[in-house]
Picture 1 (tube, rainbow, N blue to C red):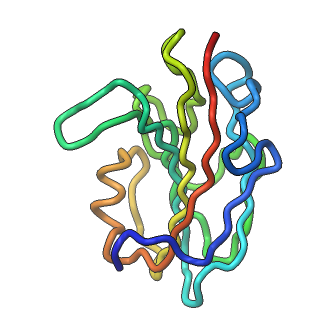
Picture 2 (cartoon, rainbow, N blue to C red; picture 1 turned 120 degrees about the vertical axis):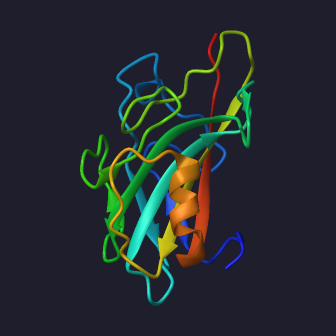
Length: 158
């Protein structure tokens, strides 16, 4: 499957599509992951992965761009939500160099950044080790992605 949006719908009780992410979920405050929920997973979904990426970050590394804030995988196919501060499932490594979620924290004065939370539906339950980067994860699961969609929130530091 190519990287095209599907009928899945990803939402959060913390912020609306295109809305501001509350400070609670950022590196300036509690830095906990927001609750997420989804509907309309494709038939045949056996697991999910969730990532958060900031394409506005002024970073370019070989083969990539932006900043990865969250890599989470091994979410069962019958799941339809993640609680706030989720610690379950398999944690990948974010660009802070840590496992799990690392909230928005753009450079001061850098303006508003856009944070894309991507939910990926897979037709398999891959047995992947913890600690994968976003790009390692995508390399492993790309042939098995059967659906995807995103929720975008914004944040800026004063």
